[in-house]
Image 1 (tube, rainbow, N blue to C red):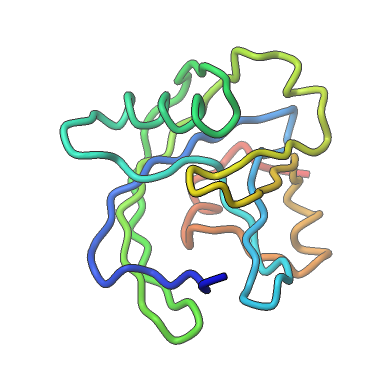
Image 2: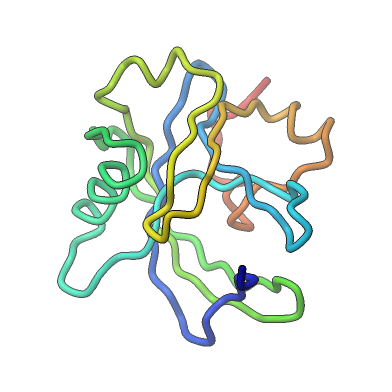
Length: 151
């Protein structure tokens, strides 16, 4: 398996902020050793010719096989980060969403496959859960826009 490194170009992405009470649905982010180092809301890259709305809809269809409703305003984050010595640079559009498949809200753990067939796990995280476990929220700066997030 090849270790992931950020591409050396600016990427434009979308993420959906799905909530179950005050818990955010997010995927685990692992380091090269397979340890959880953080979480990130689900989403992905915007493809050429695609609007941010279309990209977010497509990402949730691909990952969770569900449609979504965008219910909140858009937030724009610039994320310049380092991952194992490689610098990444992203612009990320984030918006509150509702999942149309209501059964997903009842599940504590949602397993799915990324487009490259990599297995992934999403869970509902509370703010204090992350702090207590020493787990970071990605992208950097997202917590500042999550004014409704409280435990």
